[in-house]
Image (cartoon, one colour):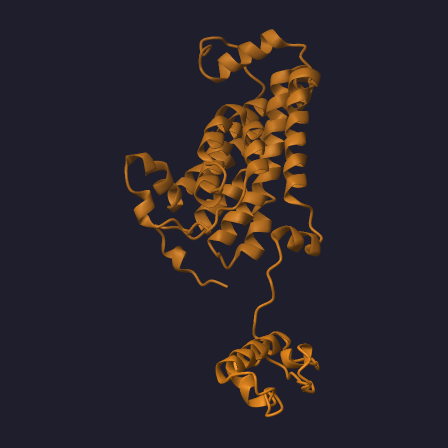
Length: 330
């Protein structure tokens, strides 16, 4: 664009005609402008201006001229804020997503403690003691379907620990307290972490380097970076899934009746469904962090299999102590 420049001499009434300056694309440094700048201080200047004053005035005029030239095309544009990028992308703001999850968690807790059926509190207490082995001598047999669901909720915390602790580290808070609480509370302890979760920056290296797996306290994480933990969880998942599927019609009718009357059965069954629904997100996040080249085809397929799918994912994903960690990346 053309940027007319009025020299200081003209502004001071020295009678010098302004010389137009046409700026080409790209920013011209003051040194380059010196060759294009017309003789601003000509012989028509008043003789009262000394040589030093003339040089100062010429330098000041040159600086003013350089500021009128267009910005360098190679200069990067100012960066927009993350909120602007989010708005431009059309995605919901993070605060709304977090608030929605926390509202869902509050609604679920209110439902379980105040709205869920609670017609059999004595039976619920007895069933818990029976399932943990405190009433082993009693001949009472707990419903086979509910027994399977109960054991499902013993396997899910191990699956979440193997996926969340290495692959879902957050800038705000660690995952392990929520994973430990999920042993007793299941998804009711995991939803708050998901609401507060913020991907770690810089991104966590996956699979974990061997230096982070040293020490006795990291025994579980070392096992998670081998195929053996996933294989053991897959075997347990297959057994209890088979036990539930082959329980028979009478067992399923008894389970539905128990679900309709018992807060224990209600809360445990809802917990199982929540853990199943949340797992695909964390599997996809972990697979992306490990740059698994088969994540686009296998992760959606494995997500369709409750418990068994995530267990097989632990077997197949790239791991620290497996040759599969050297699989080709995208």
